[in-house]
Length: 228
Image (cartoon, rainbow, N blue to C red):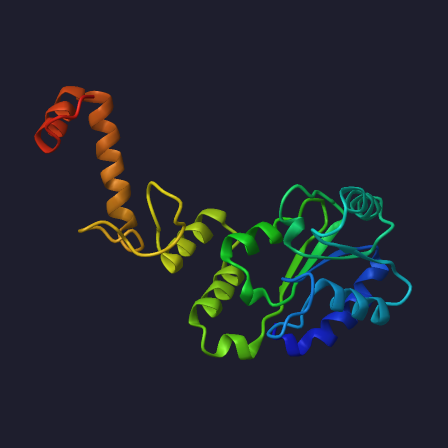
């Protein structure tokens, strides 16, 4: 949903909280910046004023460990109905009763991060929902951000999401620290030739398993001083 519908989302939250549901509300920043006024502090204050009769909690990385543990325990115990947090909740959080997650400025998150965040809900027996609030202005000239949101809407399959993420970001270094960029291979396009890569892997595994001597000869042909 466009961020213009934020008030509508909040009004719907007031209705769903009556059923005992718990909600994650995720923001990209701890504090507001010049180009982004969506932060946990501003959203926390807004939700406290607009959601009546239910406790709203705050969680971010600048809090002490004791504070974070206390807030998460209150959320787990059902004392907090809406937890406003940064992506700190991305991993290590399991609250079965939390079945709704709302991500503000979702267009600013990567695909892997969005998938991890969405995985915080749906851990119990209740049907779960994920609402991605995006900034229309930010997305106007950003085709990649729009594509990420479309992928998130179309699938919950982590393997499909990882594949599409690779196509969007590029593979980076096969051996090294760079996590995105351009292909380094002369013939294969990692973002395009998935079937070819899978076939090549199958052939390589078959050769290693069934004809190791042929593999040694091939390696010796291409790498004269290489020993297997």
